[in-house]
Image: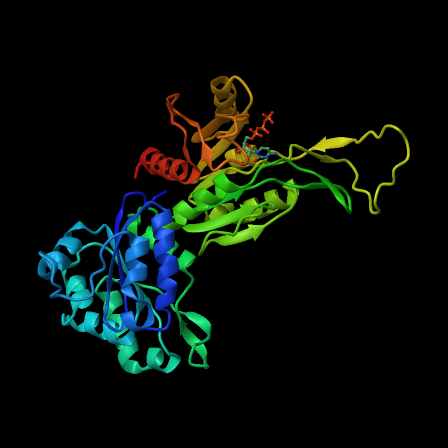
Length: 398
Ligand code: CTP
């Protein structure tokens, strides 16, 4: 959980979308963040401070001159302590104030004192958004270094249809996390393969494996949040593709190989987490295979080893493989690292419920080309993803 124990300030302005900031607050709290809410007086007409107070478990700041001991300086204290700030919804009025350095209420005063990343999430009537003054102000905020989200297009509360809607809380949360990472993958393209493959034996049956794709998706998400351009070649999974990645869905190992080889030249880093089927049916029946004899023998032929082929073809690419083993992890992973000409192989012993295919956590050991290794403790797959991305940069001489 990348927001665990982070100090986040949620600024809420007076717009109909203020109710969505309640959902955002709940998501932030679920992630383990410490959230303080500053709301404008107008926001109070849409959602009462008591709701934010109850959900954030902290007093809400609405007024610069509240009758508490340190109210007048709390905006400076909060600004100093914040790891990141999100203003959702940000109204045209607040955006105008921010763009011009005005400080005439608690939120705008606080925002002038903040030095940590600020994510601005505009939400307003379409005409207000498209007004040249608002567009000019948004441009000013961007050039001042604020992260400004695009609004969603759709039906507005006022009845019109157009841009101006506040994006979903899940998306705002994802972008807030992205704000907290240094963009150390900016300018790099990372190709990730994820999930299982399916080898059909007839139109209704296939051979596959229980890979959930969670590890590969976590890597794709982490790389995107760190500024990479991400290509995700994915077998069938139940997961939503991470935001802003180029997802290329495939079924069989041969589909996966085609998508990977077609895109490998664009990639600076290739990470193959996919659990590729080693074999496919020698012939795929056109019609459903009918139940006949007591025994049915399936003839299988080997699929191409995509990773090995990448190792043979690679030029500048930094190549990372995964090795799921049931025993002799170091020996098996080390052998695959050499045989497939990899830079890093991530080995894990599958079998325990908290590590492997379906779990949200993973316990892996990184084996490096120079013969060294690093055993990681049991971690969330997103944490494993970030450590792997760190090591790739270190080993790649960045
Ligand atoms: N891999 C691949 N193409 C295949 C098989 C595996 O690209 N046809 C890749 C996987 O994506 C993974 C690595 O090779 O990154 C190791 O996969 P794994 O299944 O652990 O090993 P295999 O090489 O298939 O060997 P074995 O099944 O004998 O352990």
